[in-house]
Length: 275
Length: 275
Image (cartoon, rainbow over all chains, first blue to last red; front, side, top):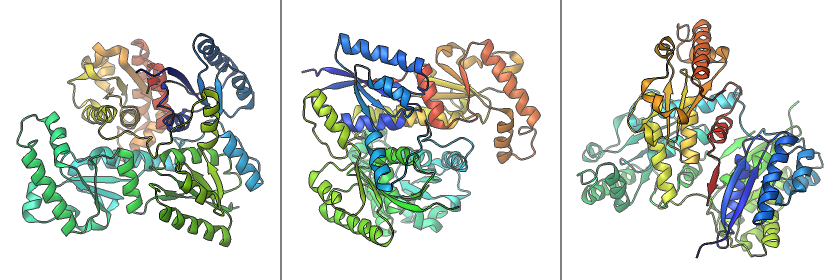
């Protein structure tokens, strides 16, 4: 049975990323009844652009059914226009801002599209540095500067180290290095020598051997590297090594990159910040 | 004058990323009056964990002032506990879900922590493929497979191509290649030969020469490469080349990675999606 499709407008005076993330979470509670077609309209700051969008909203409302509108528009004149369109209007910040104004007894200062880091700010600089560091220290390719790393991920080849590292750098401005655990390490029963001094910032990834074999097979079908025996061996050895060395690790098998990254932050106590 | 500090709890049954993004946007409207210390509490799914958190909320409320609580908890029993804490409770999905239930005349199906892609899903696979492709095609290092690219970014060295590429791959599952424009290209007055057949998916980044010189100086201080004359020359030549070849480009100087990425999606008409 195919579900009826509903159009969703995500409208923002900035990038619309907050509104989009938010809309996905809310609409995931309605996917038993509808499928959704999302149209993102970023950088909406003029009445003429807003009128153009409202025209397409009204057209869809008349021809088909009222679209859902997630808005983070701050300018009250623009909001008024949108509120009078034929869509289902959701001002996603509205309720929370009102509650906070009442509780804190101060007025909010609406700022248009200012939820991301300015390219000239210090935090922005830190973020770019983190991305550069993480790219340079992917897959153990560069062993200098590890004392600067915030986190060092370890695990067998294809256990999810690279995407997790990049995510932590991009979204949390962390300098992340990652090192593969390889058969030589298992034979020696030791962590790679270069990362041994940094045990306190090591975090391990493991994975189900069956899933690992699938992933490796896409790269190198029918290879020894991708065989289930080899994968079973490497996973067992790497988990044994991490356990012996007292390294915290988790299985990436059924987790999204976001979930792995969040767990790393939580365990390494990096989830507090000030702004 | 230093502002009073308010503690902010971001509490979720999943990663808390939606709640965190949302809370930043809302609180940016109050930074004239407060500074904020954020504590993220992900994966909260048990009463005992919730009680632990409420204890620290109440402690801060009594010793200092009531913390602000952004919650995306779905389980109603847990929500009830939280609602009776001494913090300022904001159920960020609540109002929107109610409005949608009324407008669409259906009940929502609350799903715990399900806003990210499952590691076994097809979309997840697509995302990992996009990240791998993008890493392999960074900085023109690999010229095979460009017909598979969704976007090819071009621009002078250090104009922001790599972070933008990685962001588009990570957050939008796009396969992105990027190519530096170098003096040889300017002399020939032509795009690099390998990317010429893919003009329809090229997008250019430019940057103010002064800013470029600053960025390059961090890498190679006092080099010819970082000199303001060299930067002025390269930027002027690259903009000239992109204009002659009819390539759309923007200046990355004052933009965040998110803003650049959003503009790329908008111009290449990649900002519609279905789920």
